Image 1 (cartoon, rainbow, N blue to C red):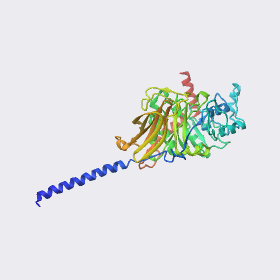
Image 2: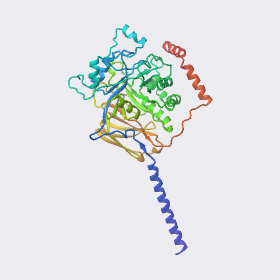
Image 3: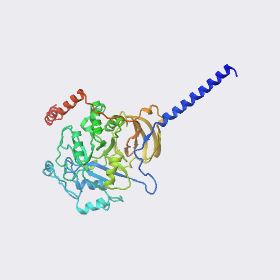
Image 4: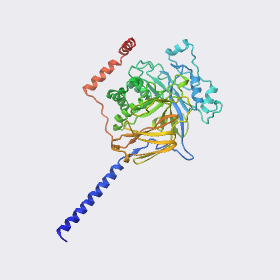
Length: 455
């Protein structure tokens, strides 16, 4: 065999080895994209299939600042087919609906206005929680309305509306909690120190982002909320939909921005949706659909922590980043809710079956990366191996849109190595915190609001 022939053979073998290594590396790169399914535990089909229960964990009555009584509010949720409900009056901790909560004297103004403060009778309460109370003509239900006690919208008397909904509080804890201005962190700590947990309520209201979308992308604002979540595991997440989203049209954008800050440290922030109703007309505005094996207070608590739920809204405002192009509103239209009926994850691929939907769009790192058009019932498949730049994604999430509104899934986190969270202790950070503390004093806020009112 000549030397020239040997060189040719050697070159061919070298190319073959390099080629096989390249193929292997490419395959290995795809295999590294592993998606964590937030609905892994849900049984979607079969005899033991879980059920989707509609619920709101944040609503009000005349025991704080709503226009209708507790009795009227509970009955309306019952008639609209809700499965669970938490009364979270401002600075008033919720109890069973056949009892009056501990009163906060300031809300006695309701009586001066001629408004009643009324709860259910024992007989009404038993019928409501058992599902035997009569429904409107032509409608039925085979489950009760589960009463979630221990909820309280803290910081209820703050001008800055830094509201946090606490859960799991004892009967005698939280009523009269006036709160601190800009006091998200202190409210989260109050809930935690009293054996409860919490969800940040309508952050866009505090940011006043309705007329200033840039506030959602302000690094200082993103840092403020992200650090609260990183410091406190008991703060489960934030409302991405609230009532008709009139003052919070961009909170799901803020959620994306916060996720990009917390997920590198292994901290998942869940997205909640609540009606925050103060009038009966807002009962059907925003809510959640919890996937549960049974409708009990214990299961609701468990699902709040596990993330086996979807955040739903009936009114979606124009959004230049995530859509839609035009605001649409279907509150009180009694339209079927767009919803997932099965979710499967295999490596880098998500398969989601949906109903009552026009399309499913997938969001990663705050941007829409894919969209599947469906005709009522259909399937959307997302394969990250086919999406350019997917190696940089921290998560993906689905938004199911239909005639009945929009349902947002929880994040499908992409498995990556996490970094240890180290709080910024630089002088600049300390200086920012110092000025924030000054701006959070009641006197400063009152003067600020007076100046704004005069202007």
